[in-house]
Image (cartoon, rainbow, N blue to C red; front, side, top):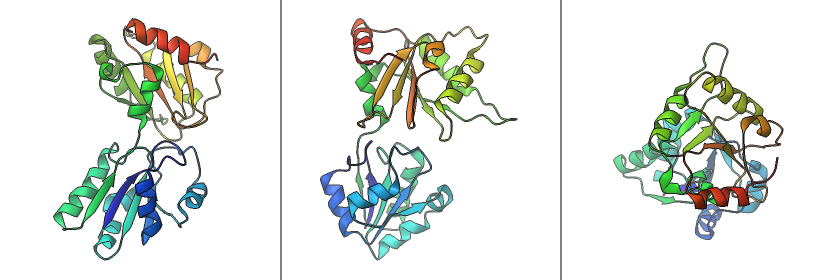
Length: 240
């Protein structure tokens, strides 16, 4: 059988049932190209008591490893919830087409955890991505997403690319919105949320520049706040 298992947000967030599956599995793989883990693979191996094989993006997308599940129990571990990364649904479709038995173990993801800020999940609009800019490639499509969300009074969750430091992310935001009619206002920063090192900040970019933020982190651009959201943000956020 093929098992697609969500790890949740912290080292020991895997469910008891999924942990039992891992300890009996013939092979355990992990993909680590979609997010900066807040822990290392060696620490996870100690929790599971099994060796873990790292898969690159190319190896996951060619789907060959799934075929091993025709004759043995194979696990793919994914940080957070396993189907939030849209490419992973293709693994389930492969199982269906090739008659490979499978099971999905869902878990907490950033989409759950952001509710800890006090912002109401049904008030979020389209999710945006903040890619790491290159010298000749500086996409700014996230600006339009923020603009559209603000037009309907919706908050914007911005997922930050791996390898993009907190300071770089803020600098890119400042550059992208400079001269635009859409004003950023105060930002919500969620750092390592769902772990013991969780931190939430709510402040303007200029003030946030001095904050020590470690990956994984995300940025939320709030729209109009309900009074309860405003009260919650002020209570749960830390001072920079």
